[in-house]
Image (cartoon, rainbow, N blue to C red):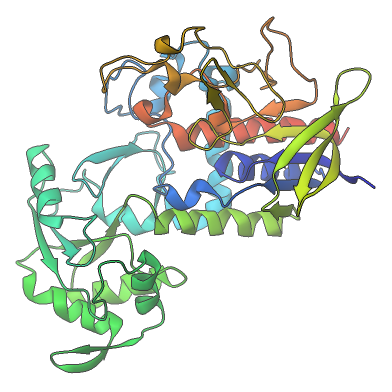
Length: 428
């Protein structure tokens, strides 16, 4: 017996989660299936709309001023500027007070662990006190056992980049952590749980000990930036207590993977999915599909412990990621979408997929399926592959999310549109 739903979303990142939520809002019965753990754990947790143009100009002050300049093939042009705005509003409702930035169209400049600033439209409240537009002097704190964040180097990079404040960095010992291979969650849990740690002054709680370690290094700075590890379940409480003990605002600097802000965003989205009644099944790859006589998708086959289980739906959303997430794959002579074998345009000669300049515009970065304005993937003749399949997120081609700093924004906007239209169609 096939498992049946109104809408089946394939993929569990921002695009898939947003599509499922948007479809559920239309009154559809929705199921989300995902093969692997969400890539959100490797993401910064920032919601970027457009930081740089496709030609490399930027950072962009107001992304909405520049969307119409993008090529017609860009996913933003497919869904339209108003849909991008609606998707951000939808995210704001889901995120509640966990994210900031909805007061303006302008990008915020968020300092990152390398000492650069990233233009972004929405950012976790944990980063809000550290915006580069804020002129207050800043102390950045790194830790001996966390080599991914060199606080003195990051501070010097910020000053060299022209940040409107004095930045200084120190590297200290994190109380209770002695190994340099400790997981990021270990730091967070120490602070979350107020675990006791040994210090030169005797046993103290982790939060008290961390504040006591940092406070002697303050030289009048009114804000202190830490790598993004200040708690998980009780992150707001941890930051507030540290700020009170230090007498300075406290903020987190987004880090590379694994990312606690990314994990928090994942938790936020999946709690919203549960609240919306979306059924989520993880660890199950989609391995095939069958069509009806009219060419629409009748059902997909999901591999569960070696057994192929049919899942049928009226509408499907493909949100499996791009080349990095293996939603698009390549062999020596072709690039392709592996579940439905949707058309992925590319040069016949593999050597035309890339350029020798490492920092040049790489053609493969734009590989993906080409959608119509309904976000239905098109075949080589520019006809919909299937009338009841839509695509969202990095599986779409026509843009370079890494160069543009647009990945989360495209996933959000296309997920919102694809899921909303799939839900509306299925609910008729």
